[in-house]
Image (cartoon, rainbow, N blue to C red; front, side, top):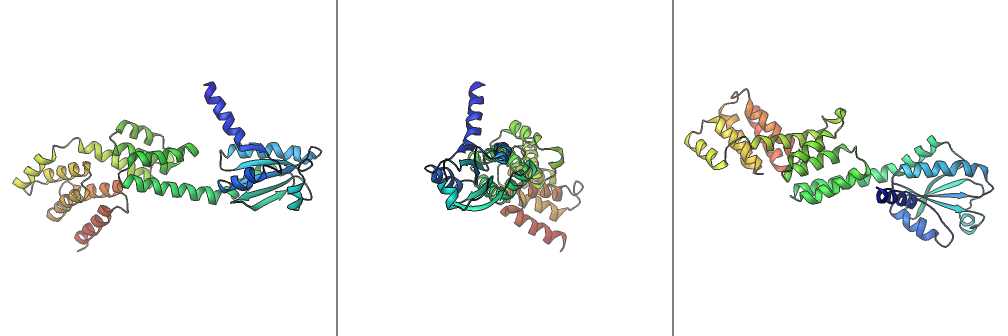
Length: 301
């Protein structure tokens, strides 16, 4: 517990530091290529500075690594503020990718400081998160469940309410057969977000794996279908079993065959099962795209 507390304190301290003329390039220019860095130009005699600095520190720490703060005493280190034309303090300049990007003068209230940080970080951080989600999805689709899980876990470390990351991690667990962990992860999704597409897909994937456990072995089901092509229940179970083994196109063929032969069978059960497959597979999956085309050609012929 003490070690964890020490680590947390060290992480918090790493977000806020004093910078000097000698360390400015490392602390601000280079560091801002990883995330925005605020430079707080201040002096001991400046009353508004004493009001603003604690607000800046609090807001930066609350941002959890999305932005850092470097404080520079202009009396002790006048060269850089002089070069930048800082004539009154407090002055806060935000550096992004090694360059000044935004800033403000004077002691702002906490709400305005937080709004400033939101504006500064939203596009950059949001873009990074989206890129990481795409990378995780690509890893999952390629069969690299461990790599995808690692990326989703990193996103959740930043924001444990990230619904897409929770859903993605649940799908990773489904893919490796860790169904209990998948259920636990889905249970972490807020009630108001449980019908989000990503969550629906993860839940469908979990339900389909559980469903596949209830049907017989693929070889036995194939024999039943060969012996009686009109045994729709056997064909339906075969589709479920095939999907459970990742054989999506073959599962698709079996359900399409039922829809062609008897649309009304089991209260339109084959079509409904296809829709659940599509939800679990995702809208861009090859089997989903092909399946929607095939289904449309039958239903709207």
